[in-house]
Length: 348
Ligand SMILES: Cc1cc2nc3c(=O)[nH]c(=O)nc-3n(C[C@H](O)[C@H](O)[C@H](O)COP(=O)(O)O)c2cc1C
Picture 1 (tube, helix red, strand yellow):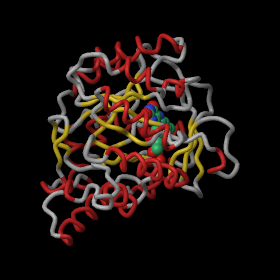
Picture 2 (picture 1 turned 120 degrees about the horizontal axis):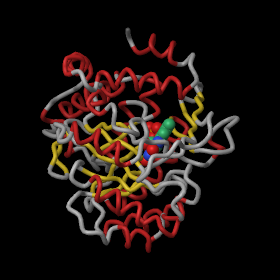
Picture 3 (picture 1 turned 120 degrees about the vertical axis):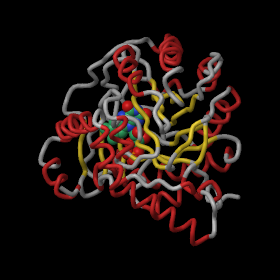
């Protein structure tokens, strides 16, 4: 069955039910090498010119799945088979939590956008760690995105992040500090220089990236990213979902907005950060990427890697393939030997 037909069924279900169903199916793919092979044959584009090495690991292509799709690490190998060059699990919190009351995920079909207020629903570090141990090391990069528990007081947040770094440092290729979700009360208050400095003071060998919100002022975002890099961060992921509710007609009054309506806002902040940090660290662009054109625009603006969540829901795995094929075509046309030669050409 092609994705358009599958989507007709999935979109008849409430969004979170559809997601849970997809998770059941993809969890079984994740433990079946045969099914993975079959899917990879259809969707996974493998070509040396698309590969880059960061964090001592080879990224098979520059398109990853955004955090939040596989919060519990159940679908890792299936997502790779669907074409993603790298996979990010999480957000994982120290202790399990159920997240916010339902409904907490909303489709805006006409706008190809989503609004979510999940609130870090996840199985917690102990359970996710056991699951990840069974698949790691993977033959593609695996990142773990980490966040504080809702009931951890803000002033004790550091303990949660340092605990999670300890827990996952040996079973991941990179970690992501999530202090940019709008769905954990006060979390974004941690987007400040002194917290960042304390956070990165911890000694660890695992590369740690910072994921930021699209709603920050440009200057504030740049300062924060610069201080993160100075403090030892290995990269920046921009951006998370937005709380600017004017992006959507008839929005919910809570949660974060993603997808097509986030595109320009996310790109604008990414560009501002890239202007300052391109060449000094690894930059990952995420937010509203929904076409080969948009993927190429982010890469040319300085993104070594990109991530996609919402457009994967609306367009399915062929989008990932289309992006990678378009990149291959462009590299050939421009006479470039590797995707890295395309990264940042618009700002060099
Ligand atoms: C339902 C949903 C859940 C998400 N959960 C997380 C999460 O747990 N951690 C995180 O860092 N980002 C999370 N995100 C944000 C995405 O990773 C991404 O940054 C954002 O959606 C923008 O990309 P997109 O427009 O391609 O979706 C979530 C997004 C959605 C739609």
